[in-house]
Image (tube, rainbow, N blue to C red; front, side, top):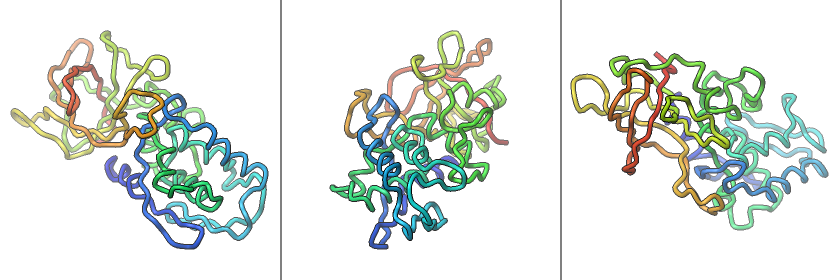
Length: 278
């Protein structure tokens, strides 16, 4: 499964409704704990789980798995508390399956009053939420395994922790368009911006998607990422999930950094690349 294929799972989620019908819903907003986070709705879902649980006999479709609920009150499945699972999509860290779960519960409990697609605007991903989920679940991890444990390559660790395990690209000639790379925004001195208070960004390239201005070496790579349309933190709508061409302008052999321009932007940024596959 490539990054774009994984992105498309968010873009076209099958959500089972209370009446048994299935509808397509898109989750593509930029969300994180301090960007568009609907804490009140997150709490409403969690509190409903804590106080009343999920009705026995309810069938939830999560990925290709149909889960029949067998008991009430603070339901746990596969050893993980559901209140943690349902929180992740609000914080920008949810997998496609966890987004499915939240959307189904919102429908069952009558919270999607304006429809499921409108409700889905409350959910989304930040940059390392998408990349981390892809890196974790591409290894065929179960949907209920969060990837948050020590040493796990999941969605809720720093950008530095997601980037460092992979071999750094040390020359332009190393780039192979058939391979997949993580791209981390860095400071002028070449240090990776870890995120949080030191705002960063991480993206992952789609293998075999490239453009070249000369010879065989790629000068543009197609990245799959969550990057906000607007930097207004409380925007009700703020698309994040997308594919973007990254134009490679110059390589600094000493710092091992690429100067790039993102598609649609005149801003020049510095990135390091590391090889995920190949």
